[in-house]
Image (tube, rainbow, N blue to C red; front, side, top):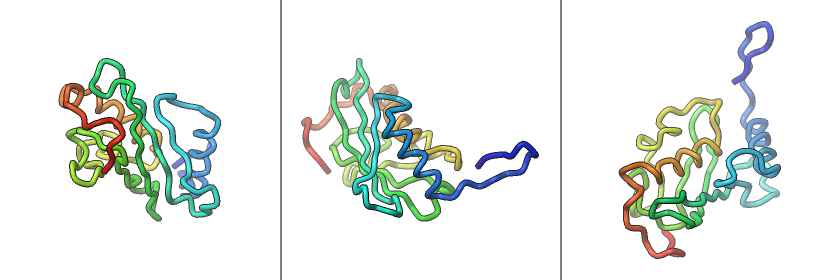
Length: 146
């Protein structure tokens, strides 16, 4: 959602927002501890994305790289993307059987608004890795998947 100089609210269409997010990621703008991009560059509806999070230093996640899958619903950005870990991870905000994030436990998805995007969700997940609940949790063997 954006505002014009006259104060009018303009709702940016789904694909325009996603194209902006893709361009930002491809140019390497933003947090360099996360990455995201399309699974298939010929996906004209921009629905399936790969994500990656580099584990924060000083935690059980230190130097690990976590792979995620991000699915964009048709009514995005009104609702957050669907996110699940491909890499096995032990966190209080991740379903231990499926790897899907628990929306009510991730600040970015719990407080979602249409100005947020994939990057904010991945940053929020990385921040959760440093929380007192998650920083010391024993992690599965590196390389294991859901």
